[in-house]
Length: 146
Image 1 (cartoon, helix red, strand yellow):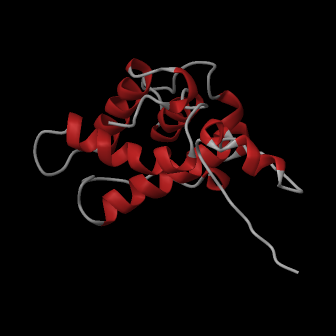
Image 2 (cartoon, rainbow, N blue to C red; image 1 turned 120 degrees about the vertical axis):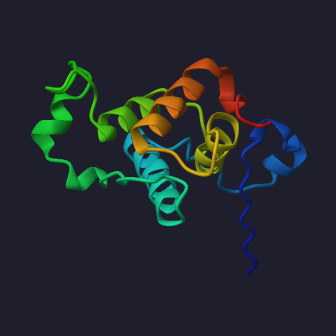
């Protein structure tokens, strides 16, 4: 008995004859908004660890109280702006067409395109990330393949 497992981010390019021979085909889809938050949060915290982001990192989603998360999208916090975690959530909500691979690249692409200097504050970086995600929208996650 032999088993062959294959994965692809471009399933439209797989040969039909190959697909016809497969006994089982499973489509996993793109990460959920919570998974996108986790992927980007890990990338941002790694950037903080190596000094690319100069101040605080972002909390893991499970560390943000449920009552705080429920308020996201309803407005701003008391100082007239969004919390860092809410800004990251807004970025994640706008990236539903992106694969996990593209999400892992995004913070570093944004840093190379948007940051002048060797480091920046988390809040400024999150705003750049939100702007980059909003202005580069296209179907099927093709926007960040530069």
